[in-house]
Length: 601
Image 1 (cartoon, rainbow, N blue to C red):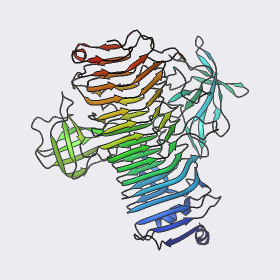
Image 2 (spheres, rainbow, N blue to C red):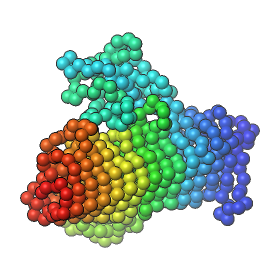
Image 3 (spheres, one colour):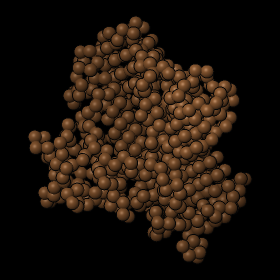
Image 4 (tube, one colour):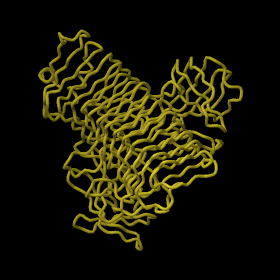
């Protein structure tokens, strides 16, 4: 961009009123691509404290002149990304949008923050001109002849039909070669469709029937419902390009009045960061738009964070995965190098490049067959080998009986988590998926879910997400029509997923208080728990509705396996489920059910 143009767009000055001498950069509105202006403004910052102030308006960001850099992004695809806002090694960063809309185009990562000591983002909207999804209305289904007819949505979408196949989004030379993960939404409510299942369509042929209608020839175990809106996000190796906001190794982070209408992955992603607030913000499609999908993955995601995390007064809808996922990371012992050193391995392909531990971190050793957190040792040296393997040297000797493929979990990087006053609805998967041993408080929220509303699942398998919870309070929430997708789920679902060689009966999660909540819905299951000790289910009101048929009418209200010290006290149930409580022998020995109305043991 010409120097004069940049000068006219940017006015840089030192604030006379800021004791920290924050450099304030005024961004004047322009209808042209603003990417170069932002890149140059950040690159030419004179100090380590910076504030970008945008004149209110609609701004366009294109990848052509964005910063290109190789990025490791946990739970996304690693690789070279085009980044619009890249902040690294700043003492403080502020982005004031003044109500502006940032409209992104194509494959671009909006924001990356790394090694910043203070971050504030306020008063802005993130969206894409053309979303990276395919959406279509299901018109007919013929299970006998193995086809279904759809009418793709056109307004604001990009797709094409060639060689008996549909590709999308066909932007700047990029197209998905498969539909990939697909879910179904109700056009009347924009929520996920009652009883629907995830699909990965792979039609043998797509036939053009005319009038904008296409026939998918494909044999499926589960067919979509007529009237549903099909939403596809492309193949799994490509459908998580980057989050709207990625924060790495930073702290003291605040998002206030920030809304993400679309993202090519998660909306907010935090890695090894501490003290995070997302307040008065949201992830949802524009009101009145024909779009159904906001972020193509989790709305918010926290990997190995610490300090306090707060999500408050937020509206979260339309994403194709969890409302929030809070977890640590399990790694396996790949090799014992010496008495103090091990080589560890990351296990999931979307975790490659993630920094599991650093010097000064305390680490738990988890040794088969027990999933319990065992010996603690401090890391004194790290040696990064490649994106999968790292050598860790510890202050004290390794456990004598440590073996290859035992598990390590980072003790230092776990957060205290609070979600309060939020509305989380109209999306695939769980409202809250949470795994941290420190205090968890989930209160005063409105939840409606496709799968379980609140999931507690440490995984020493597949995703390798730690860890076991030890202090959870879930209170004063309103749960409505939870677990309304096709799979069998519960409002509260506790189900650790442990790999081969681990004791599948040993207690894993502990100490959950579920109190003073209101639960309304047509499904039976309220709590479904495995290997849980110390659940107190108290003072809740459960109202069984008849607006839909129960998807699993024989399921009990409560089901416990290998659990201990469960208390169901002073609750009220209104409904006609025959089986109220199902408990195996171990769970039944310490189960206490008393002073309830309408609940039978």
